[in-house]
Image 1: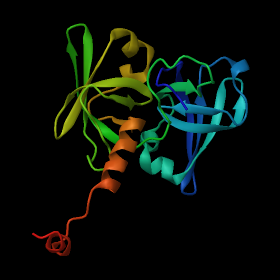
Image 2: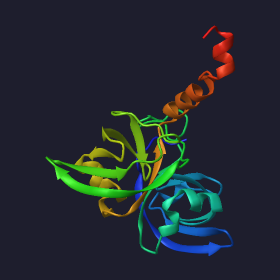
Image 3: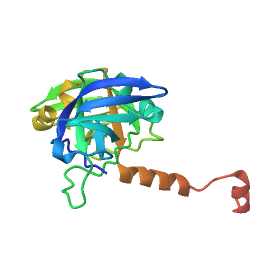
Image 4: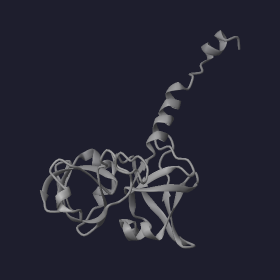
Amino acid sequence: MFTGIVQSVGAVKGFQRVGSGARLTVDTGLPEKTLKLGDSIAVDGCCQTIAALDGAVCVFDCLAETLNRTNFRDYRTGRLVNIEPALAVGDRLGGHIVQGHVDAAMHVMEIKRRGGDLALTVRRPDRSSFPMVQKGSIAINGVSLTVAELTEESFTVCIIPHTWAATSLKALNAGDCVNLEADLVGKYIAELCRNSAPSITMEGLKSAGF
């Protein structure tokens, strides 16, 4: 479990395809004493398990499902990535509940200044599988943000200068692919609504007297 508050900006040291998956090596920039084999680390919002460790450099084994769901397939050596270690019980929940389970990878449509902030507009995922509401929470490359504007085709978040400077979001350009995770509570509500919706059939209407 994570909170969407990035702890460091790491750098990709290597990305090697292995069968249908890949082996990802990242210099996390985290204090060495805080890392150990088997730990969960969110890399650009995607929960990964440390499979090998050398100081702050971590190696992760990425499954085919991970490559299909995330922007990992675009990784190149030197790419900046957001890093967050798993939340410890009792830690402050500074952002929102983030599982590190990426729901979609979508393209940035526009980045522009809006007053003192940055407005980041991203193509909207399929509404049937990605619930969103205006002023709701969303994780973009592992960063907890708030949906400021929502249309049928896109959504926009406004990012304060500190968050822009302290995360890998500052390296984004229009056309780049970003990892998205929908709000967990919203996903459960959407699923409950789908399962509780009554099934209307002609037979049912006739039996009800229509």
